[in-house]
Amino acid sequence: MLKSLQELDQELGYSKIKEKDYYLLNQIREIRNYRCHQCYIDFHYIENPKEHDKAFQKVADRLHEDELRVYDLQQKIEKLRKSVERKHRHKK
Image (cartoon, rainbow, N blue to C red):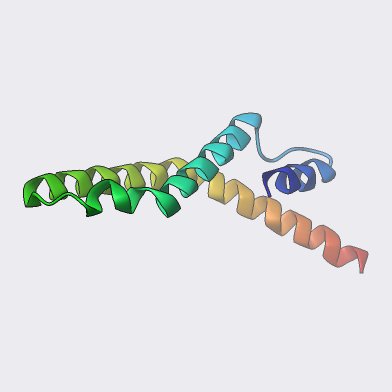
């Protein structure tokens, strides 16, 4: 998916998304894998209520940090999506 996005970005003749943004997208992919496969396990099996809450808060804080990191990138990707949509709409 990342490769397809990069190809679409370059297809327009100028890149709207910088290399550092693609690096962040790859990190997001890794974060997604963690969220889907591991984060629940990181706190679910802790029996001590205080330790459980502490571990849960750590996961929640990480999620919030990730959200802040990706906001600007999401805006760039949306601009790219609209550009590609306009380009392909005019071809029809």
